[in-house]
Structure formats: C-alpha cells, structure tokens
Length: 271
Image (cartoon, rainbow, N blue to C red; front, side, top):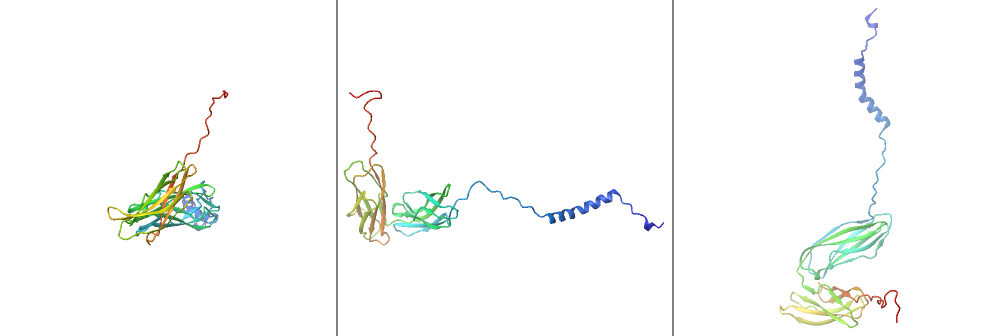
C-alpha cells in the first residue's frame, strides 16, 4: 500500500493548538453578528434648574463719576414649567435690583437689572452680589456677581441712607446733604418721594469750611402705621453726571399695640 493513501495521524496537542489559534477569529465574528447591546441610561434624582443666565459675573471695570451704574444679566427659562422669582437679596443697600415682573413661561427670556447707587460708596474696586431665589416647582437660588472700580465722586450724599424713628403723630424732619467736591455749582431742580408717608423740600445752600458747596433736602415724616416702611427720596439736579439721585429712607413706625392685659386673675370675679 502506498504511503500517500495512509490516514494522517493527528495528535491531541495539534488539535488544541488549532483551537487556540482560531479563538480570536471566532470571538470577532461573534461580536460582529451579535453587535453591542444597548444599555439603559442612568438618570439622577435631582432635577435641572429651570433658570439659566447668560453671565453670572459682570465686570464693569473703571467707570466715570456719576450717580449710578447699571449691570444687566440676561436669563432664559430653560425648563418645562413657569419660573417665579420669590426674592432678590443684594449684598449691599447701595444696590437697587429691578425686574419687570416675577413669573416667566418656559422658553421666555428677560433681562435682570442691577444698579449701583455710586454716591453712597467710597472709591476703589468693589465686588457686589445679588442672590436670586426662584421656584420652578422646586426652590432654587443663584448668585450673581458684579465688579466695578468706582472713581472719586464729585457729589457725595450724607447720610447714605436715612433712618427715621417715628413713634408719635408729630411730624419729624431730617436733612439729606449733597456736597460737591469739585468746582462748579449744583442746583437742585426738584425733590419727590416714592411714598405719601413722607414729603421732601429743597433746603438752603451753604459753603463749608473747605470751600465745598453743600445743598440740603429736608425730609418730613408724619404719623405712620406700625412697623417698618421703606421709601426713596428722588433728587433731580442740573448736573448731567448726576441728573437724579435716589436716597433710601427707612421709617420705623410705632410698635403694634398689644392686647390689654387681663386685670383679673383666672377664676376671680370683678367686684
């Protein structure tokens, strides 16, 4: 019998090596057929806040000497429910935050205005904040920051904020002094108040010992209801850098009357 027709002997070791060599190819073919199985996306328990601001920090840099400076923060309601702003909490009483309304629909944009009343602040670099609290089904808050380098003011207001304690029906009058630190005369054209609880009148002009010209506004508070009352005195001038100056006034009215104490102890009768 010819040797060519004899069956080829195969050892177990040779078969094992063949299987090892074919293992990577089989694995690749299997992944190609089966493909990558989709996995569920993990979702967090916290919801995304609905109010998104374009900028959270506004830097005005060096600004000219004037009564006020404004920063604007644009925002969008990116959520699926209305957003209601519940509180504005500025870090300084010299800030005057303003909003046109309090509630915005989904997708609605608006601009938040933050005004610095510069006549109440010393010169130099400043950083202010305003915390915006809002609700979109859940309570949230966001911190806005404002940087500005204030120059030496030509006009200084004293006091920066007027506080009046009014516990009687008799009128109480307090002055607000405007001092101009550079040459030139400042004329007060008009004064008004934001509340009928107070009235204001233009006072006398004087020149102090340093040669600076001062003007006075006299604020009068009559009888007021119990509690705290916040209002503003608006002073219009002929200076183009200070056309209007706003001075906050806090009026502390009388305390709420307490109920009359019982004259008799429990269980006793009046005689």
